[in-house]
Length: 370
Ligand code: PEP
Ligand code: MN
Image (cartoon, rainbow, N blue to C red; front, side, top):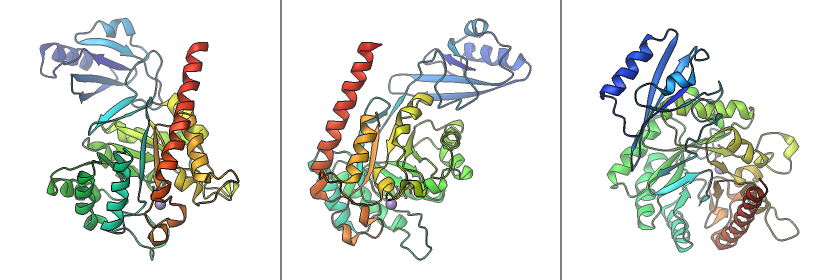
């Protein structure tokens, strides 16, 4: 059960103390307070854990400072959607809105390989009105002998260039908790020119200690990729780890499943799950067409498979697209064969725009018939 308190309720107020005293007297119930500091107001929620079935909604609604009570199901307590609730399905970070109702494109380098390539990429993004990108510094690789990313060495110039080209949010994978501190330090050293969305890759979806660590910080939002060999439910529970530790600014990423059934694509594309994740949870949903398809193969109609699956995800209501581009794919140190080129950027963006427009028309149609 969640008690949603009146906006701007302070935890040192008399009302809040009365509420806590009351809760302390209920047997077999523990509570946990979560506060969200918004631009306009402070929102406080109190999670009641334990034997809540015996509590009456009416009685709880009448407690001091309580504005609304939501009875939650066992699953996905924080990030899930529950009956009769209207909690937010969006958050804002560094001036960019991430919600189940809008769309952001994160085109960029799977792995940073040189200052020149980062600059060419960001310059092209700015020229096409983009404020988000992806830049890999820490790369989890199948082989220990493969390039592992430039790590913290490249962060200063990546962040400086982001500031120069108006990039507000960079999706950046981390594979170890120490990387969060390195990113924080590099942002401080360069004067906070941009923002970072911490990406947890498919190989770490169930790295519970990493999830707990990342969940305990609330400075950076998180993009959690679905595990490529586990059920959707297991991956959604992984997202809930982040939220249960305190960080609810989580985007859920679909990136295809590992099975030969998807051949010749690198992974079996799972973008039919975009509306499913939106129905079950309040998280915005990201699609990664590059790691799903894994090649630059093109259909006879002249559209790359990467573009086709992007359109499929976007027309189903995806809220974020994470996609590999590279100024010179042949020189990319990671995943060059699946990268789109800078010349293809306007083509890709227009194709996404068409798919998004179609989605919005479909959504309006549903509203008309409901
Ligand atoms: C990536 O986005 O660069 C990546 C490694 O993705 P995934 O974790 O989905 O394989
Ligand atoms: Mn990659």
